[in-house]
Image (cartoon, rainbow, N blue to C red; front, side, top):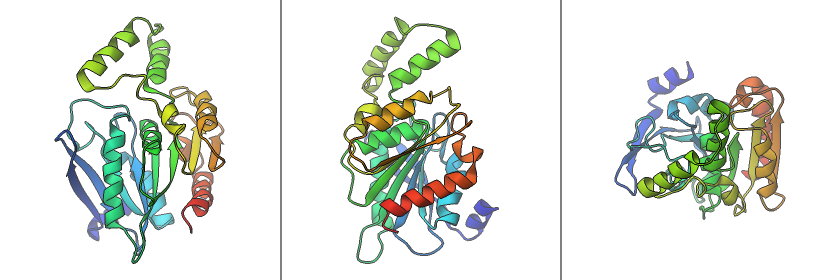
Length: 264
């Protein structure tokens, strides 16, 4: 019903940008119920798309009063591309969407106030973005069940699904990925990017997550320098289900944390 109401009011719209590699990338834009510079850039997970983030978008838009920028990552949804980039090259694309959000939603006389929130591979993308230079308008990051590196995640799945060791398959495919797409599995490391992050970050994970193991939460949290960080574990939640496992607690967590970083 919320999406239907946005469509009737023509508040939900599509936009496209041309990425550095020439592919056209797509995002959904939603203006806040009332004019504001507060904006959430929401980043989806592996094999998902922007539409799958609209449940979280409802929270930011309808409950918290934010504008939304919800991109389709490379080779996902309506965005062009031949292969998913596991969040690594996607960080460059998300920086482009951040720049758009900054220009679209500046409040009179000041910058926009932007939070980047990703789930699963989107959380990995968010952490990769956090290690880059971001505009002053970006106030903080939320990573929900992100992995430490593409290598670690692929190694986990190789073992869980097939009972196979890292050598030789992971080494071979990583080398092929480097040759074809310009990045290796070890290079795609949210953990290393988090070590460079100086802005606030909220780390979220379900305690029963085995797809991106729960143990990665503490590793990532410990890697983040400074004290401007928070960590929340959702008891019993499996992968990417923390919000659905306890919506009230998740929303209050966001409201409380955003209140400390967004100047609300």
